[in-house]
Length: 324
Image 1 (tube, rainbow, N blue to C red):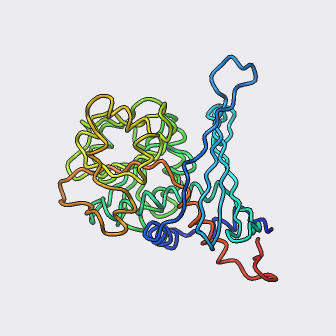
Image 2: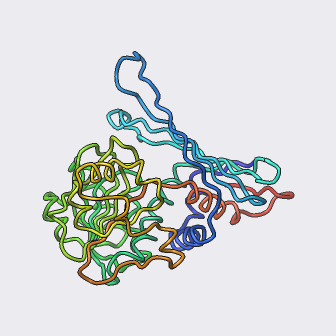
Image 3: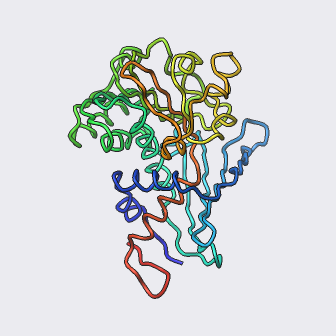
């Protein structure tokens, strides 16, 4: 088995290629069981869970099998550490032979941003040039690059709870060629944006539906658990809603709260990302329509990303490939 470091993993996940690989994977499909979720108690056993562990398998019979192990420990942010870590292992699905262990953090963050961009290619206005990024973490840092692969993004505003982090990310994006700045006023920034992309670990609504201008596309990456939430129910009431998979309807706090408050129903969902990619559902229908994409992540995306990396590595021996 080969070990692929973070730099090599990222190098082979350029957004143009990754978005195309995800689109192909959603068209062809693969076996994706429901993820396993396990809560990890804190040291005392008396407080709230210290973290969550996710196990996300996917495979194509006769092809490859992948398993991602994800650990999410929100308190890490107060320690100056990343809240999410992951490892990805790729196997031969015919023999079970381990092929490679890849940097799961790079796979997770880049495929997540790429999935948002893939959805935006169907749901955002074709002339969308103004992006608001809500959040300053690992996925948020990639969102402008990913969206620029599908839409003519020029202006980027960044909002974060920590103003210094928002300014730092804006400076980083400016160095990448964007007209970027930190947004001190979140409602005003939402109202200006053509695309609003939320990539946070929030447990309370940040974005309000009343702030969304006509024609806005709202991209929601956080809220992959029932106790997480980035928006109010009005966002779902005012938008045509698409999800990455049907699993979002049962997993996302954003969706569950909107259903519970009577602002949305499962029947109101316009379609999934696979249905958009296969041409089974229409995307944006007018320049004034408000659209919403809710993702919770799927192991199909991880497998597509891991195979993209693995197949790009130079051959070594028989089935294995080199790294670094």
